[in-house]
Length: 125
Image 1 (cartoon, helix red, strand yellow):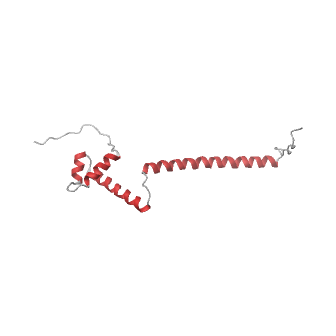
Image 2: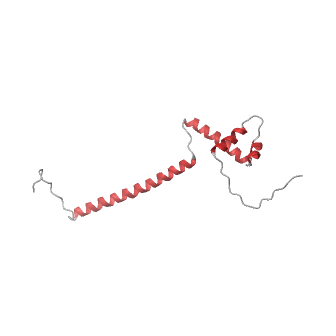
């Protein structure tokens, strides 16, 4: 007799650790084991398992091609955000610096800022 399970609640998306993903993918590489069997074993869709396999293979190919380590997309995104923020701050400070230079030049032209004479070599006044 076959049982039927009725889903009455909404489930959240499950998150898998890197170790869990690697273990699942490694199990699919064993002789005589199908991706569908491993997917059923862990309760995930076969397409997700194929996606993990492809990403792992592609990451390895990229690392070999550039002779460098592969960086996670989340880390790249975080670093790009940091660069944008630093560029924004740098642009703001550059603009402030230019405004101050223009103000000093204008004040000198109008003689609002006097040119201070050189101080004597000794400290006597």
